Length: 371
Image (cartoon, rainbow, N blue to C red; front, side, top):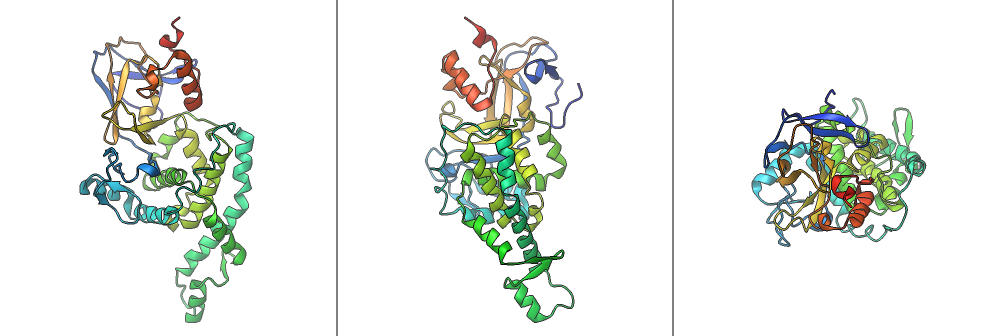
């Protein structure tokens, strides 16, 4: 089959369609044990949970086990293990990206816990109709905010021939016209209402990171769109509402160059692709007992799950390495496990609960089929 954008290329394996598991990776030849079969470094977006931001490097994800990292980048909300990582992070984000994180941090700082108690894990997962309705319900406010932000752009631009008095009035928020639309108090109130609504800092990080990745890598967007889709990616209604509020938050604060990318289509594409394709970012030295974030590496997402995997994955800084755990014969599927170290030790029934809850499928691997 023709490789989708972002699929992992290798002479050691091929990509095939399967009847029940979608696209899967199969060995193209006999592969000895402990062979590095692939290395994935195409990180699209990552989220370091707010509570770990002081301990986990924002670039390479090194973890100091409760000790605060010494290198900070004032105002952006990240810490780093070294000056080199801080500089690499800034280069990756670009000038607009750094400004975006300053805006996000300025809004989130001091309010990071206000949404943490709002999520009821017992709520059912929203279905497609409820998701559509939730996004549609914020459409009118979003349009008002867009007009207000467009007025901000006009206020920052000095048209030729505009009187000094008119320039001052625009800069101070006086009524303006944007593309024939009058910017009024209604538009500015919509923006202020969004800024005062509850914040989920980790959802904010997820959305901002995805938007900035698209802004900085526009030619790679198809790599994300090629991933398997979860049409119901939100854990519950509170989670869904956190995303729609975050949409309005970001419309209100994003640097103007990124603003046009902030749409429901883009944010829903990020959620529906990340949901079943993300990898947990965990501590490395203790079997991953500490979970401090997650990220999406498109090329790594083509490995399917098995509770008895023949490929072991290991994070090395910002990349994932995949090595055969045993000898693999030509034609065999190459599988990793989606379970953490402790979860791998669970009974078949309890493993099934975890996989259905987190990944949305019933496992039929050989280990689960054993009596």
